[in-house]
Amino acid sequence: MKSTTATVISLAGFVSTALGHGFVTSPPARMPGDAMAAACGQQVEINQKSDNYGNIQGELQVASSQSDYNAEECNIWLCKGYKFADNTANVQTFSAGQVVPFKVDIRAPHTGVANVTIVSTSTNTVIGSTLKSWDVYASNSSPIPDEQKSFDITIPSDLGNQCATAGDCVIQWQWDAQSIDQTYQSCIDFTVGGSGSGGASSSASSVAPSQTTVAAVAQSSSTTAATPTSTASATTTKAAFINAAEIPSSLLTSVISTALPTAVSVPTQPLTEGTTMQDLVDWINYLMSSVTVAKRHARDFF
Image (tube, rainbow, N blue to C red; front, side, top):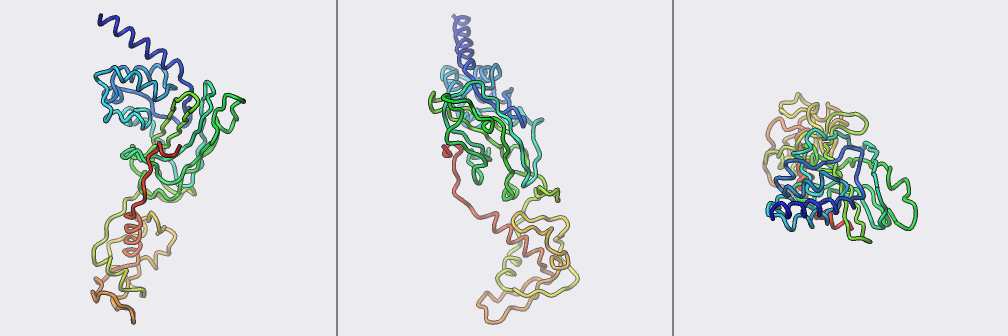
């Protein structure tokens, strides 16, 4: 009986994957592996390993009869359950503003919609704006346009340090073939390095400034040139929202006056001696990076 059951399950997996219709072939996308099998179940992983072009609904059909399927751990609506741990060798390094060419292999057309977004893997929510979208994708009433199979996306310049660590973000292509209720996904693991012009890396993390530095922003608008005593370095810090590399080092290292500006109602707390413009830049970037925005689930983009 067990042998017969296993055969039926394997056949069901084969039938499902035989219908696989779309996958990103360049840049290298996540593939199934042992970590996926541990979270999503062995049969689900076998299903996708036999045909990574398969759809999420097909995976769920296989998973529904498997005792080793863990819905929470699998998180199947993020990259079809494919895991970063199985794909650490395929992490791409991009720069802000870099144009990245994509290649998609569509084996059979089915009318739907599609988009390309950057997704936070910790929350499965879209970061920023949609990079590419199609209101009608892979229509089965006409030949598939070349621009739906070969296109460019541009790495946003406002990611800050959100995608500085491998595994934190993916570029996700998603095709929702509504005409047959099948959803296809491909995910590219990446990190953001320097600017598109080849500048220094922008992946340095922001550090919360001291309360004295916070007070400095409210209390002073004047600066005087002096020998810097702050440990902040303009050459090692590139701000996420204010690009310190584009500010003259003589200004960054100048010390903010401890005197309060006139006719300004602010707390009368003097600045710490040696507070520099670099401290001010760091604080502004920390403040901007702390602003929260409404998060949208990746599936909300359809």
